[in-house]
Length: 219
Image (cartoon, rainbow, N blue to C red; front, top):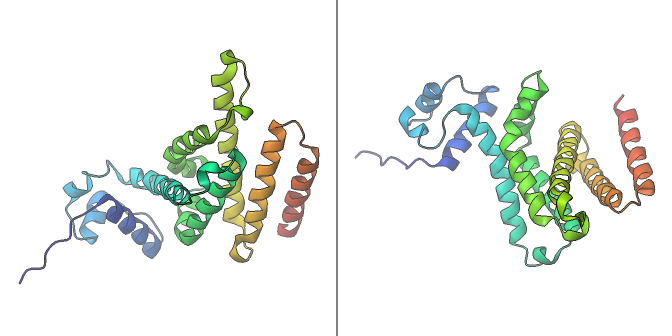
């Protein structure tokens, strides 16, 4: 009796791609090879993705979408202020990354050209900035209407830069359960919000001491 073929899904393709990359310690060479090894037709692949690179981008977008899905399951989440929502996002997102650390580390450190590695995060960047826009409250916007759009973009871009610093710190974090990344998140988010409120000096010093201590221990 012939075995019934399992229907291919986008999530299944992503899972196969991550598994291949980890097992072979490299990315698939071609769509044909990838499809052949996983028992489906090349044409089936193109119903979900245009090329292998688009899978890489989709993986990080899925991490973000799953994070937001988990946040929204918390009945109290909507009542959080912007700072609490951002902290919740960071802790949840990096918990998901930790569960997939081998793949994330391999994919983001594969090429010596760091900018090429960051291309995988282009879709994540757009979706992250949208998330920041969604949680940004009026108290963090300049009130003048003429510059409000510029202010929103500035908040989103600065949040993205902060996110990249956090991701880099996490990739280099060797502490148990990534405890130092948790400290980094708390201090950096606190600092960013105090900078907006023009009361940054204590948090700036505290955050600076933490970074300096970590660099001294690394060197």
